[in-house]
Length: 499
Image (tube, helix red, strand yellow):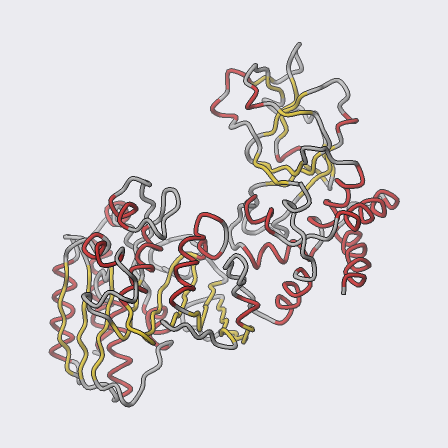
């Protein structure tokens, strides 16, 4: 039996006897053999480095560390490995120790390992907060591999307070582990991590991205098309990616982008060499997950425009009313002083239809925070399912269609675009052309892999000048065709003018 198969067998025995809810407390989801082997394959080795220091933080049963050791053994270049594993789950430390002891006795290369049972983040917080590359005290590792815990923590949690330079709000442990892993990496060292793709955009992870790109460059990104194939024995639905970093200030010319639909053998791997500047934006450090030439064309087309909603005085906002928190104010019919409460269901074929006869379509309240002026708006669904063809689904809302109301309300499962100065009809229709086009839908999918439409990201997306938006809107109003195809035709006209 080879090294990794032995550890996988022992891990499966552990999973079989340990309830998932117990493991979930630690954010513990085990990497499959196929994924571990693929991650180990991403490292590059030099013939003049016979001794390597390796780190696996949140090591679990040792699957990733052993996959890397087996790769090193097969290369026959490295003679000695010093392996450090952090793991503070008392339920699995003994299994980790047994696995590594067996591996050390059966590997053809020399292995010395140590297991550190203290909290990975807190044990190094003082070193981390001094000066990232300038601090000589911590051990620096040539290779770092990891499947960090996926667990949200409070903004006042000790780990969050320990790393203020990368934290914003209530963080998730996975990017704190990634930040510390990068800190632990030696100059020109390599790090391969598997983690959610949520960090690639938005304000929430901006400090983390700034830290990452200050000290490292991305060399490889792997995306899983299917959410349920990454941790195949764990029944985890997660938008997940594998990322390879190198601790260097020199960015490569390209980033290797790979995708698979299944991780059973990675046999359906597709590869695209994307220009580095196309993937990593030097303006906001967003990471655009461009996996083929068609997606590259989408990003390049969008970057022809230099305006954003915010520079034009517009803004996407989240709906005001969390309906289940205000049940006492909700009504099924239009009684005196009640106003419409708009839900995603009211968006139909590009327009807003009201009333529909659904429950709680009206609200009666004196709370001004739940009410907004009855003005022209573009509604955009905040949530869609993974299986839906479009991520951006929007509808034109015109105040003139509801003259009986000075005020309205919006449920928080829709977003809306408005302006303090108000939107003319041609502006609303022009915004509809943009957000209902296949170009914008494709761009948003590249930017954000989740099923939630994030207003922060939309507000930062490139848009044409206001004159162009109005011209698009007037053209759409003339045709009265709200289809995606009609919007694409209009976009094509004005995209050519911008080129």
